[in-house]
Amino acid sequence: MVKSGWILILLILLFLPGFSQVTTDPSFPTENQPVKIIFDSSKESRLGYYTGDLYAHTGVIIEGNTEWKHVIGSWGDNSVQPKLTNKGNGIYELLISPDIRSFYSVLANEKVIKLAFVFRSGDGGKQTNDLFSDVYEGSFSFKIIEPEGTEVAAKNQDIPFSASASGEAELKLYSNNNEIKTLTGTEITHTFTFTESGDYWLKATATTNDTTIADSVFVHIKSEQVEAALPQNVEAGINIIDSQTVTLVLYAPGKESVFVI
Image 1: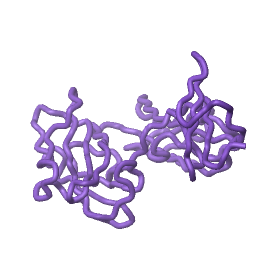
Image 2: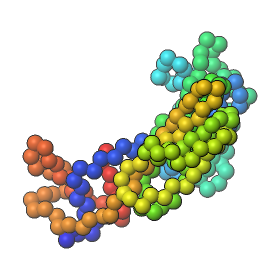
Image 3: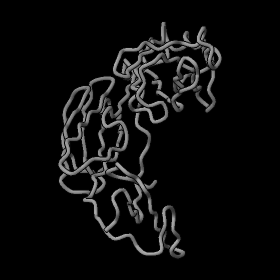
Image 4: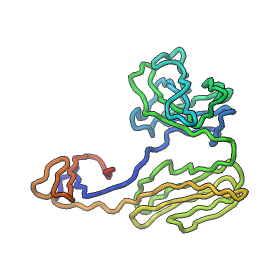
């Protein structure tokens, strides 16, 4: 049998975008209003769960440009870069006020489409990845709140789902294009429980004034793990068998699942 901790992976492909570590209040911030940034350090892969002082290296993304603009202060200068408020349990908040445009000194001819952040420790020795949060135009908006990205779960595990609209609308929820629920309001919620392994596409739509907005997320339900003898003549790492076959042998003690992307 395969020794404990050795996992043989034969073509396991799964799309896994990064989970959202940053949420906002309100859920659909516009550039002409204040917004509270809420950061959950436990969901950030680079910094990880953190309880010390955090500062924000932050700017904005302007429509038509992918570069950070109007960055506040300079890296590592605690006297000018905003300090986050530690709310406990690895949760931090940053208030952007009186509004986004004023906070970042955005020019009159510029339109903000995203807020950009790197949160760092006071000495600059620890930091997050680049984090972004959308800025909305103030018209009707809709998005999935939970799950916060592709979800990997076990069979029969409860998977909470919620989506929110900026105004009242006809809301519908689908699983693999099969309608699950419909209602009129600003939020639609549901708890999914899948009994079969595989991939599920969860989609929610919001319709108002003949305008429909959709958002979607994938859920992967894990299959049962299979224990098998390690093939002969393979070693840790990538083993090229032929022009169409690759065997990956990975030593991952303490891990229940491993995905190759």
